[in-house]
Image 1 (cartoon, rainbow, N blue to C red):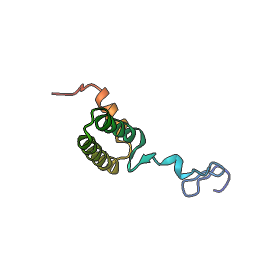
Image 2 (image 1 turned 90 degrees about the vertical axis):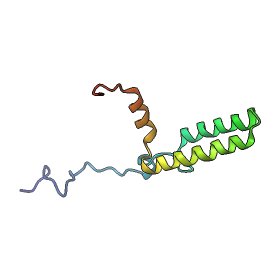
Image 3 (image 1 turned 180 degrees about the horizontal axis):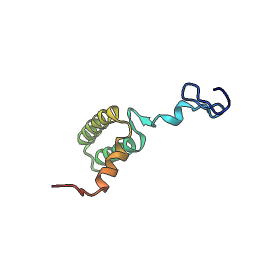
Image 4 (image 1 turned 30 degrees about the horizontal axis):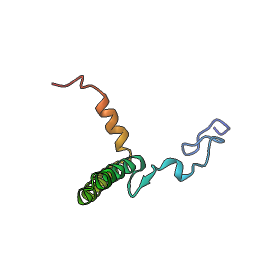
Length: 94
């Protein structure tokens, strides 16, 4: 049976739309989600410039960016997942 309502390889005729790659990929800054990278840099800058602890600021930035990069490599959307996990209560906890 052929006609306008039949499926061909899982696609419906006339229901295709091109999707640009930038709409489907997360926005990363140095391999870390953009907002989290900005927060990490701001905290490190406040420590380094505000408190004049240059080495501590660089260490916080380097370690934080490295750990966030590892987490983003596993799952680029780890931040919203972590926030949702922390908001939910443990209903089935022992």
